[in-house]
Length: 191
Image (cartoon, rainbow, N blue to C red; front, side):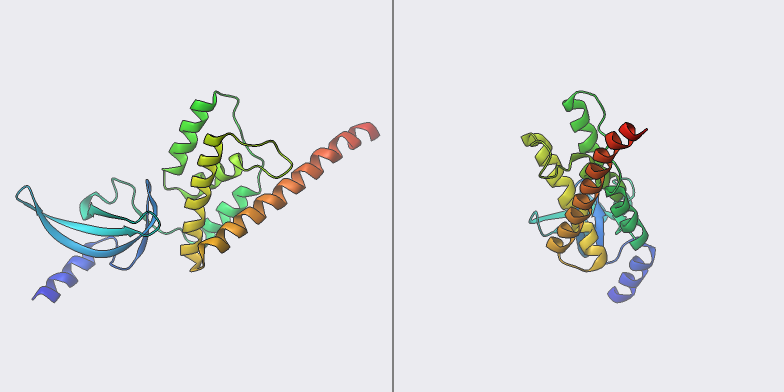
C-alpha cells in the first residue's frame, strides 16, 4: 500500500528523488528524499534537498517549489547560451557601486543561468586590468561558483573543469577585446 501511495505521489510531483535541481538562493542541490511531516497539525509533503558544498539540507514544501523559483537544471542549449554571454562586452552601468552590487546579487539569486553569466562577465578582470575591490571579488566568485556548479551538473563533469572552461572563455574574450581596442586607434589614423 505504501509503495502504491509513493507512485501516486511521484506522478503529481514536479521533481523526483535523486534529481538535481536549482534553488535560486543556494544554487544546485540534489533531492535526496520526498518526505511527509506533520507541522502545526497539518501534513506537509516536502522535498529534502542537499547542498553538498554548503553542507546544508533544505526542506521545501512540494506545493511551494514554483513560488520559491526551484527549477530543473538548465538544458545544453541554455548552457551554450550562457557561455556565449561570457563572450560579450561587459556592461557596467555608471551607477554607485552599492546599487550595482544589489543588482548583481539579485541576478545571482535569481537562479537564471544567463543572468549569473552576465554577472560573471561584468565582474571578470583579466591580469591586464586593475584589481577588484573585495566586494567585487566576492560577488564574482559567488557568481562563478554558481555558474560552474550548474554547468558541471548538466555536463556530469567536475566543478574545477567547469571553472577552467568558464575562465578560458573569459580570457579569450578579454584578449580579443583588447586587440580590438588596440586596432581602433590605428584604423582611425589610417582614415
